[in-house]
Length: 77
Image 1: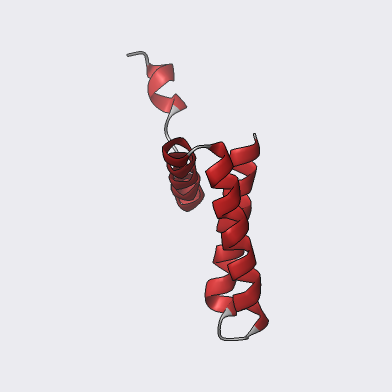
Image 2: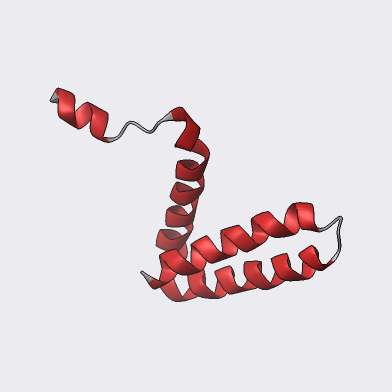
């Protein structure tokens, strides 16, 4: 394995949470299929919006919205 190939997959520590979430989304899409991932993303998006209406639920609702959008984007493209 060349030195360039080793650095190709290295993720900076500050970007690791985003990389981990994206890998989770990719795993869900590959396991469920594109259409189911889009529908699941839409459900997460709606639940996130409903939870965000309440102030206390916004703590959980905003990540749900982000996760739903990521799932829908990954399912579409």
